[in-house]
Image 1: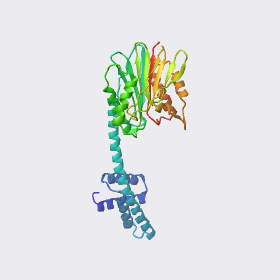
Image 2: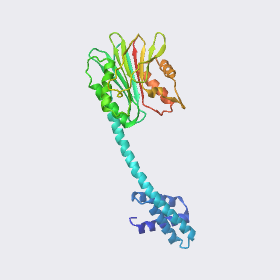
Image 3: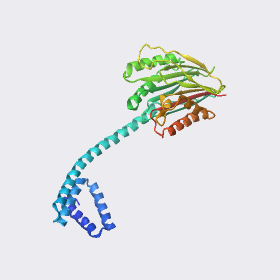
Image 4: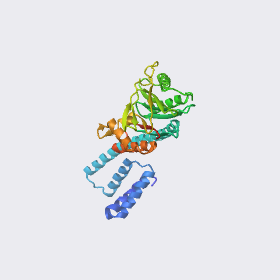
Length: 336
């Protein structure tokens, strides 16, 4: 079947066999012919043309209306073939891009990876899930020379590759800070200058930085326009918002950030998050912050890491497993 003539003869024999018998064997032979045609890169319009020629040879007296309909079908399939070729070319490019994005996403996971610290008196849990392949959220743990724990959590207003590149730059900048004790206000002022110099003005980055003093269990923090977290009081069994005003990073090079302080009692929790948590939806409606607090309260008897995992699973199910934004949640709990 390497030439049109041989294809025509083979196809004519197959068609005649089917017309005369209409049995399963004839259909099977036609199926094998189709597979061979695909292997030989024979286009649909070529098969239509062969069918038309075979029909004319088998039934020379075919009415003109049938002939014209076959010509119409042939022209239609020529257009279809051209469109299909374009689709295949686009599909190949899409698959190539998806492969590159997959590699980039794995590289980003490596670049943004952070080691979750372990303390006897502090239980730490963290989880982050991108809405797409690339993550526009970021969290990072830093242990200084005095044993205090720094916690950074940031969010690029946007998704995809640009947001991921910004997060990689934030991580690199954080790693360049000295290991000595760094107050949250100083960290944010330094990051603000980095973003102002290196990030397009159309992109906005929010960031929260906290410093947990493990010696006297005090939590210092500052915010650059970031989504407020929660402070859970075990004694009162209540949640309150962690309010900390501050301008988003990169808007004004000379911005200063106010620093706040919270004493952490046994059993208390610090909950940090991105707006991908607070903007989860139930149907068409955004959930209330009180609902997030209630879900955390429901799992508060678990270790901190299991709390974050269970909270994520809860809101993932609520949204039919379709995240609308990157989801990041960090919980610190002072052990009793």
